[in-house]
Length: 437
Image 1: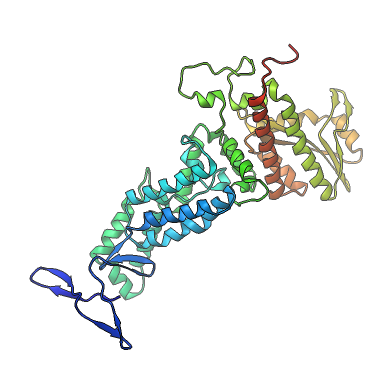
Image 2: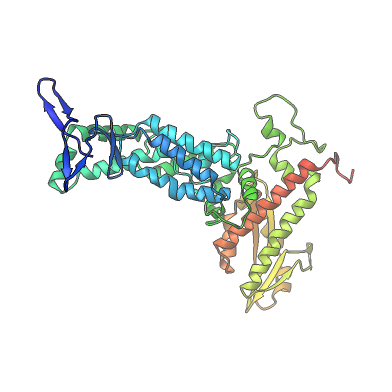
C-alpha cells in the first residue's frame, strides 16, 4: 500500500495525502495513513520510520506456541536456540533497538526457560547464556550479541567499495546508528562480537559459586553435548532433574539456607554440613548409591571396550609387594595391555591431582609384570567429578584406547544419574546414624 508523501516547505514537514487514488492493472490500491504499519525486507515501518514496536508481542506469541507444543524440555531448548531466537536477529540488527528493548527480550526468554526447566531464580545467568561446551545451556543473549552484530554490519557499510553504499553510510542517520551501536556494545566491558559475548558469559558462570565446579567441562569435548542437542536418550523429567543437579540447584540444607544464620548439619546425623559434596561423597545414607554409580560407569566402559576389540577383565585380583590390588578393568589387544581404574571425586581437590593419586596406586612393577610379561602395561585412571567434569589426562587415555565424544557424553550422563539417585535416596531415607556405630 503506497504512501502519497508531499513536502510542506511552510511547515517544514512531509505530509501524507490520503485522498489520492492509485491503480495497478485497473485495480484500485488502498492508500495508507500516517499511522499504518508496513513491512519491507522483514523490517516494519510506521509511515516512513522503521519500528520494532511489535517485537515483544511477537516473541511472547512464539514462546507461548513453543510452550504448548508436545515436546520434551530439551527439544524446546533446541527449538529456542536454533529456530526461535534466530528469527529475531534480522529485525534487531537492521531495525531500531535500545538497551531496554534487548534486556526486555532477554528477560522474556529467561523466564520461559526457567519455567520449562523449573529452575530457581538464583541460578547464575551465565548458566543460561554461556556456550554449552562450558557446561551451560548455550542460549544466545541478545543484549550482549546484537550490538556487536549491528556494529559489524554498519562498519561494513561504511567501508564498502560501492559508491552508493558509502554515500549512505556518511549520512547523519547512519552515523547516529553507528554511534548507538558502539555505545550499546559497551556492556560491563566491551563486547564487540559473538566471541566476546561467549567469553563474558563464561566468565560470569565460572566466577559464580555454583558455576565454579564447571570450569573443567572443556577438558572433555562432547561431554556436555547432552545439554544442547535435544537428546531423546533422556526423558523430559530426567533431563530437567539432571540440569538442576548439574548446576547444584538441588535442595540441600546449605543451598536452602544460603545467607541465613541457621543450623545446616546433615539430616542423617552426620557431623558435617549438608552440602551436595557431603551428600554424594561422604554421607552414610548414600554409600550403596556411590558404589552403584561407580559400577554403572565401569560396566558401560567395559562394554564399549569389548565392542572396540579389546579383551576385557573386570576386577582381577593381583598380589603385590604393597598388598592386593583390584583394578576395575584390565584389557589386552595384540601386544597392548592397559590397566584402568575409575573414580568419581569431589570438587575440592584438582582433578589432575586426583588422577595421579589413583594412577600411582597401580604403578607397581610386580603388578605390571603380572598384567603383561612381554611388554610394559599402560596404567590410567578414569577420573571425573560428581558434576560430570573430567580430568584431561583421563580423556587422553580413553581417546588412546579408541573411545570418543559419544562415550564421554554417556559416561558423564551415567555419573550424573548416579549422583541424582544418591541425592534422592538421601532425601527419602530416615536413617540417622552410620550402621557401624
